[in-house]
Image (cartoon, rainbow, N blue to C red; front, side, top):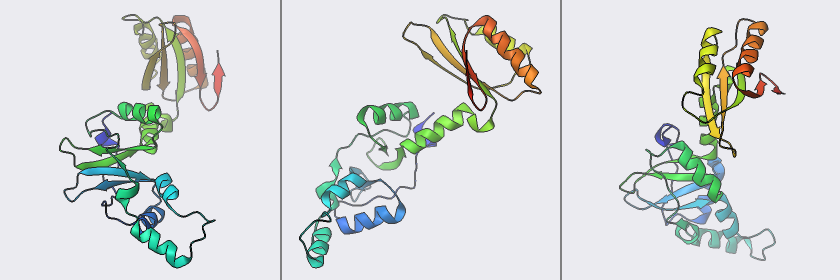
Length: 222
């Protein structure tokens, strides 16, 4: 999954000279949590989060009067509170890479930049969630079956063969190594013509792999 297919391309951005007053209103009116800062050439200069704005804004306990508050908010610029040279990804990087960077660094989103430094978009944790929902096929319903198999070539062939023999149609296949070196595989198949047919598939899978669970609307542990 490439970032360019999941990112938000129509990005709201500001310049380094944008005032905190305008920046705060922009984020509030558009319900966004982060804003890229770009220079006159459209290249990324930094990024500002809603937390940056909150930290830079006068607190409710301030002794400043209204005039002084507006003056402060108008004088403070994006360049004064932005994070310069932020972590970035390219449109041709994978969504998985973006998710890893966001998870490891506790980011809610990342600017997406072209090779020449121009801002191409932004990818957020919500975009990652959308990608996950789409590739798993969960919106199409069906049954998810979790199994554990040996991590060796051809180990999944008997499982795929029995699914085909039972007329099961696969929506998605995800897998990961476990700590013991085996593979955990998560199959989602389409709803079948009857519950009996579904139960027959689950019973057949159990004979060829260690069944971890199966789930339709609720999880049934093995």
